Image 1 (cartoon, helix red, strand yellow):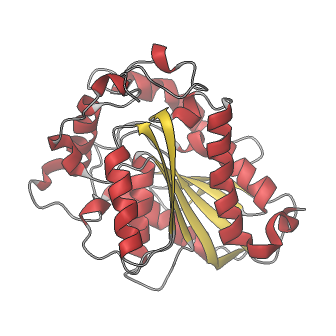
Image 2 (cartoon, rainbow, N blue to C red; image 1 turned 90 degrees about the vertical axis):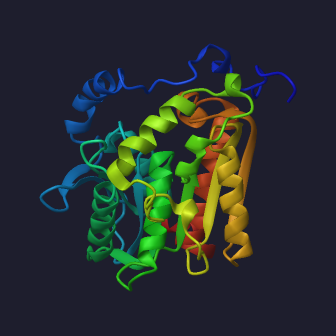
Image 3 (cartoon, helix red, strand yellow; image 1 turned 180 degrees about the vertical axis):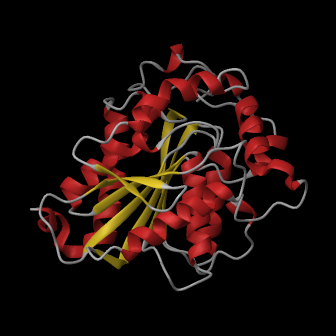
Length: 308
């Protein structure tokens, strides 16, 4: 791609979208717009209380199984915005097509709740999900988008520290992994959509809080030195995404550590393209690839038969 306006031919809205929608002035407004949807019970699902601070939006398979696999979904939003309702459609699909128990976690947001609070909320939801009597704790996958992908990657690290939950797969869509991206200059800023360098600095500054130079690898998983004990991974990202380079670098480090990692690169795709233009063929193919890798990890050779 030689021109800054080069986007995947299926992504017809790309030329008209802003380089970012998240800024210091817009965060409050976006939160207000999303607040109502987050409070409504999900269609074909329920709101469930994990602890005094954390809830999940829970979706069950149409046919109960004694011990079903499970998926924990972590929404995006740069650690600043978003809510668990953003995962409703995906979680319903996982429950219906894969026969899995699916939960989207409502974690607290920065800057009011910087690291480690959002990660602790997600870990509480993961443990709660694994402890359910209808869930097979040996077959749990964690899925995250953008900042949620960073939290999902951090959960994969955190789970290696104990024996309570060991995910079988981490599925990361354009994950926000490396705070050091804020000190770099993106080579083609006019190709960015929905999330740019300014919003990235705001997101990381809000999430890390007063950490200074002492950044935990659980806050920024790309800082982790040892990746050898992690769950297998699927990472998907577009070439016009601010996180493209850090995602490729993380995938390569996983492979070098002996961790199976599938990398799906979408030429000309911007950040969150599969959400903004979800009906575009390239977006549907991306979504389908994510679902298929989950199916294989959770159901193995039995595949969709479990959901029937």
